[in-house]
Length: 80
Image 1 (cartoon, one colour):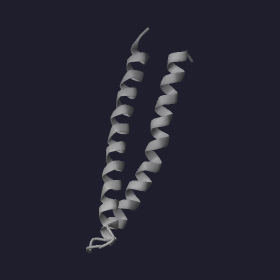
Image 2 (image 1 turned 45 degrees about the vertical axis):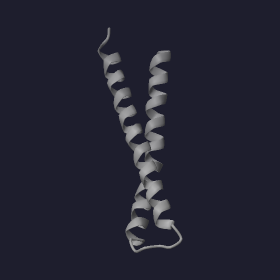
Image 3 (image 1 turned 30 degrees about the vertical axis):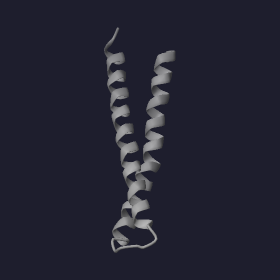
Image 4 (image 1 turned 180 degrees about the vertical axis):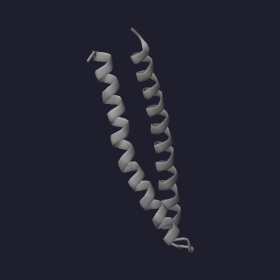
């Protein structure tokens, strides 16, 4: 494997490895939010919503980055 290909594979692995725990965290936050739908004077509900929004943003960024890396990999494969 070339140095660029190794780097590409490492980036692809990283995005996959980080996406998985983010999805677990996001799913758990979503479950907690649905359980805590009633008003909460301590502000826990608002904090959970902020965490969920942040996790969603990170997840979206990673998905976009992973798609770009895959496209780069496909271009590498098509070059002689």
